[in-house]
Image 1: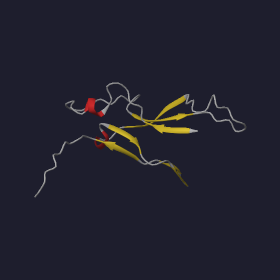
Image 2: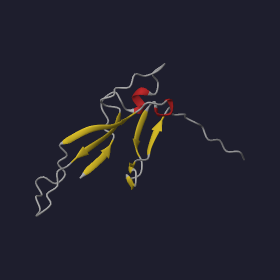
Image 3: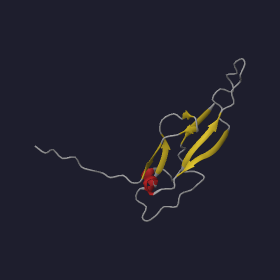
Image 4: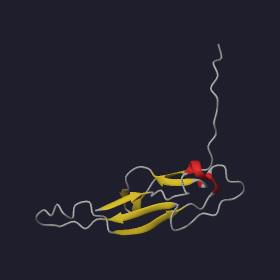
Amino acid sequence: MALLHRPLFPGTRPEETINQSGLRIVDLDHESIWISYCPMVLEGFEPQHLGLFNSHHRLATSVSPWERLKIGCGTPPILTRHGWMIIYHGVSKWKNKKITDAN
């Protein structure tokens, strides 16, 4: 079984990085989408190993300006005739907008 996820490490949360001036250096080992694997037994049932993800690999890393703050998984992967397609999202900056009543 495989799991796509984005782990949060200290100092990498968007609220911690949003106010940094200039370009931020992306830590390729942390700020990215990871894939982790859990071994599954084909026969029988071994509850002691269920959910034990013990193999972790970086799958995708921020490379474009529109994904400067973070990237994350979207829909579950879709199997196509060309391989697995993954839809993901990215965030470049947050804007605090005040909503006013037009009346």
